[in-house]
Image (cartoon, rainbow, N blue to C red; front, side, top):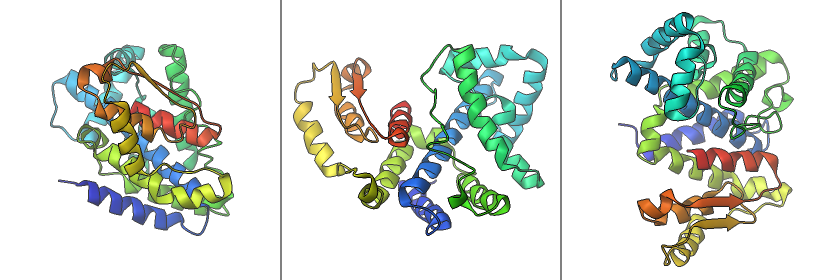
Length: 272
């Protein structure tokens, strides 16, 4: 069983792949963005498993069945998944489809960009939702950035390495056991001081967030919480986690953030 420490070590090793080629705040964004997209893909395939009544089959096998159902029913299967979990990734654009292309030698970086764009379009058109709008914007995840490599081959190699980093992680199970959220916090905190030097940003240490959350949640009747410098959203989440299930379910989160990539990170964190 994969532990929180296992995931943290993997994140650190992944950071080594890009260390020296770009600022820490940038490769943090790439790693967290890919982790989040893997979560969306895993969640989609988990729902397909549920609909098929085959909870124990491997993701590779369920991907093939999902593709067959999509060919037969078109948007029907997409709308059903969307109705059940609130979002959906089309078969062609799943993280697992990238992995299959990598294994067959047919992977192209453009497919990742296309996947991000397709997901946002799907959510806007089918769900009439802007919840995911701009979440994978090029300001946060620019796969043509020369910092990823001076040419297409180098960029493809680095991006492929990061994609493979999370290949065997079941993000849904990690999220259910809070390991995924813990990994997000770890990666954010690990690079916070370095990334904040140039951006003028400051990360609230976990210990400080815990104390503030304990003070705030002494009154369990709170219905909303606001952070004027929300950053990654960790303070909001820490407060929410201190409340009982009933209070947490009725809690509204508010925050503002100037930096677009940090704002998108907070959105990912809250969705998780």
